Image (tube, rainbow, N blue to C red; front, side, top):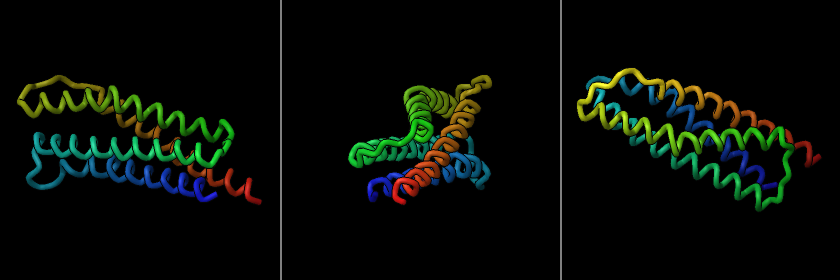
Length: 148
């Protein structure tokens, strides 16, 4: 039960990181006095690459705790986690590298046309955080149901 509770706690810590960084820091940094586009992009790259490492670590810990506890969750619960991890993989191997490349070009002074990469990132981030919230609550419900 302790491993399952720890897994749920990690899930909600992960949700907190996403909420604080993707849905707050990312929007606010460009409103701060003295932050121009180049500096904001540099800060963004640093913060989002750190967030990505935290997310990967969280996902790995949840998987390891699930294996160690020999816990079998219904697919309706586990599937939410799989979707979140699939999105994390997509962000790690495609979206973040593409956004980094774009940010580097802009910081070098290259004028680029509009891109939908940020929109894609925000959309999949909304799906991912929703899946993680539901996964956390359903895991908690599953844990309580099995321990009665």
